[in-house]
Image (cartoon, rainbow, N blue to C red; front, top):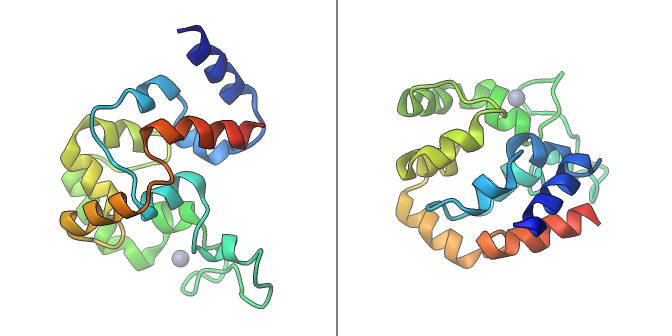
Length: 157
Ligand SMILES: [Zn+2]
């Protein structure tokens, strides 16, 4: 599909949304996936937008972007998902479920490998019940499969 490869080229070339690119380097694999609904927490991980302090600081300059337990760290999605010791127990449980240590580079591969993996990552670090996740993903339709294109095009343009 010519459009998809052009889109992939633009995705690789763009200077924007590099975090999302690091997590989702291959557009085709992502949009052709057979499972996986996006919920609020996943959207935050993928876009780095949301209630993490690093982002909300833009709107409230009195609020520090520092992690409350790691004075030298900015509290963004990367910190919360991959590094913060606040969630080390949950992270260990996640790695046990995945049989692998999750890094930004293997996150989407692990998510796409199976539905249980997807749910385990989608519920991290809040350990939500899958039913609750399902409810959320129905309520929040920002990034479902078809709209991923629009969202990404918006980032790119
Ligand atoms: Zn921290």
